[in-house]
Amino acid sequence: MGWLNENTLNYTRQLTPKHSLNALLGYTIQGLTTEGVTANANTFTNDFALYNNLGAGSSLVAPGSSASDWRLISYLARINYGFDDRFLLTLTGRRDGSSRFGPNEKFGFFPSGALAWKLANEKWMKNLPAISDAKLRLSYGFSGNQEIGNYKYLANISSSSYILGGQLNSGAFTSGISNPDLRWERNAQFDAGLDVGLLNNRIQFTTDYYIKTTSDLLFNVGVPTSSGFSTTLKNIGSIQNKGIELSLNTINIDKGSFRWTSEFNITFNQNKILTLDGRQEFTTGTDALIFATSINPILLRVGSPLGNFYGRVMDGIFQNQAEVDASAQKTTAKPVIFATRT
View 1 (cartoon, one colour):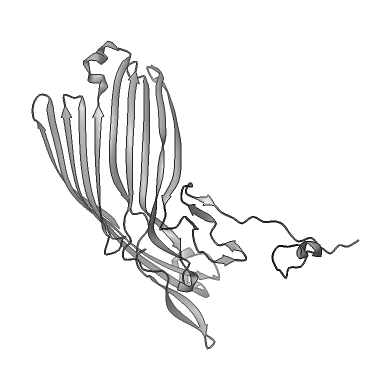
View 2 (cartoon, rainbow, N blue to C red):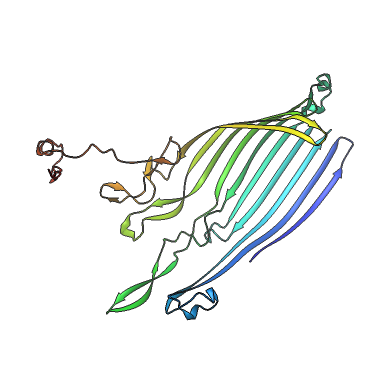
């Protein structure tokens, strides 16, 4: 069951013929509660009742059940100021609290600001009748990410079955490492954009240059397997994305019931890791090696893009004893011998 309650208060006033103000205060709270039950059986004499009579199966499978609960509370404010319908200023701030984070870091504050200059409303633009709309935009702000699932900051308990004394028993074990300081992932983004409309907006062009820096990354980091686990969820490091977005929309034909439009967009993006948790690089997952192969081959390295695949270089297979003897390392390997039949 999901529910949402939103409460907002708006204030709008035309201060003078050229000055306008709009303010908003808000409080929202939402939640999602889920429950699930499963039952299974097999080896039925017929399928007449389908799943409506599981007890008719001669082999019953252990039932299962689950439950989860999640909450988000938000306090928000926004101010819009306009001057002469040419210059626009927007200031916002919100404070969000999520049950998905540890007791020490449930809340995060995310402010932002934006400026816009409506060039089309300038007097000197009236001398350019081909330009029907033009706006220059600048913005900088913060946002948060909480999409990690529920109860990730806790040392959760899971159940398992085991054989003891020839009998099947049920037991419990810790399935993760607790992290009471798990907190919001923060995104800081600067954007500069230009919107242009030509020929009564039959041609619309938009370009944006952005720099987005994500800090306190929520990432599964490898831990020594002597801890009993291979990974744990932590806030580590920061990454940067920057680039240019271009879009072009045109109305080619608009006559009666026939309308033909075109849309084109392209993005150029550069991504790199700025910092990690004090290290220059590490592989995700566990640092343990199995048969000389990393369990998780994703390599995080400062200055490189996020999500590089990492693997060991294979020199080949020993073909004969001479190659084994010439190896730079001591080894008990034997050359590969293939049996043939004639």
